[in-house]
Length: 165
Image 1 (spheres, rainbow, N blue to C red):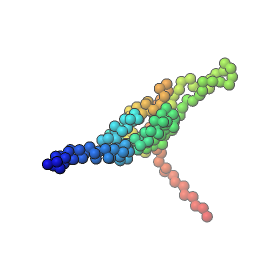
Image 2 (cartoon, rainbow, N blue to C red):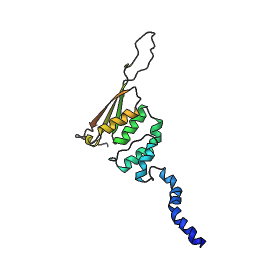
Image 3 (tube, rainbow, N blue to C red):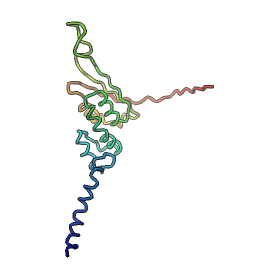
Image 4 (cartoon, rainbow, N blue to C red):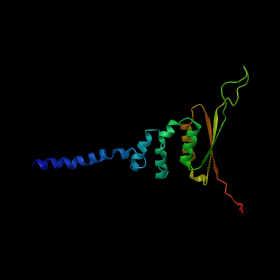
C-alpha cells in the first residue's frame, strides 16, 4: 500500500524536480527555452523583437549585463546598435566640456548635446527604424538629442589586383 501511495506523488512531483534540476540552464541565454528568453532579457530592460532571428535575440540577452554596465556611454550605444543591426555603426557627437581654460571665455563644443547614429548595412529595408530609434532613445543619456541614419553599404565595383614578386 505505501509504495503505491508514494508512487502517485512521484509522478506528480517529477516535473517540478526536473525543472529545479535544470534551473541553471534557464539562466543561460544560449540554453534557455525560446519562450523564456524574453523574460530573461527583461531583467536588464532588454525588449526583444519577435522579427529578429533567435540567434540575434540570444546574442543580445547574452551581452545584456555588459550593455547594462555601459549604459549611457558611446561604446554601449555603438555595441547595442551593432548587435541589433549587424551593421557598422558610427557615432558623431557634439562633444565639449563645461569649462574653459580662459576665465569668462567661450565654452568649447556645442551647448546642445546631440548624437548622430549612422548605421551602414547591406540592405536598409531590413532595419526597423522605429525600433532602432527606440533603442537609441533608451540607451543614450536623457539630455542628449539624437538622429538615426541608415546607409546602404557601398559595393566595391573596381577591384584592383596587386601582384608582388
